[in-house]
Image 1 (cartoon, rainbow, N blue to C red):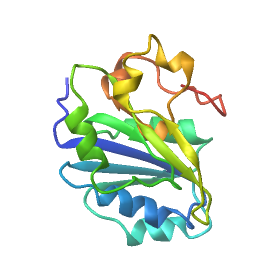
Image 2 (image 1 turned 180 degrees about the horizontal axis):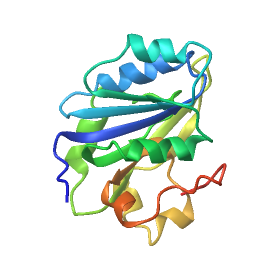
Image 3 (image 1 turned 120 degrees about the vertical axis):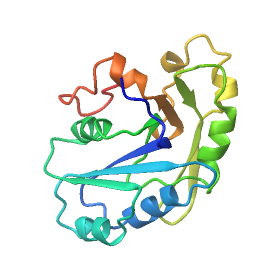
Image 4 (image 1 turned 90 degrees about the horizontal axis):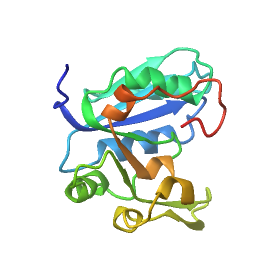
Length: 180
């Protein structure tokens, strides 16, 4: 069995015509301090400049797949084959981390042997107006009996242990929403 030790976290991003937001996403992932982060971007053969951005911002810890796919879950499944860490987070191409310490702070709080950790996301409009904060700190989730059935934590605020994707089926690519 392969031992995952090269990176502390792998961030998976699927794209399709994401040129307007992708640079900020890549920069946000690359800016994480105190942890080693692999970023895997799977692009569904975009035609808006996304592929040019991926070439321009390429770096050693960024893996890129560019090929047509049937949606986000197929893209995520492709990326999961390239994971080189114990922890996985799915970050949208229009998402960014709150600051450069998000994953380092998460790693400090990730104790106790859980396979999923939750956090919060702040949603805002393109102009910067905040819509709201969704999810909650892991410390609050862990006291609930069954957090996923109460309210699904947002993907960008959920960190999965890689073994989940080894021990259970991957994402069902036939679903268009709520595939997990």
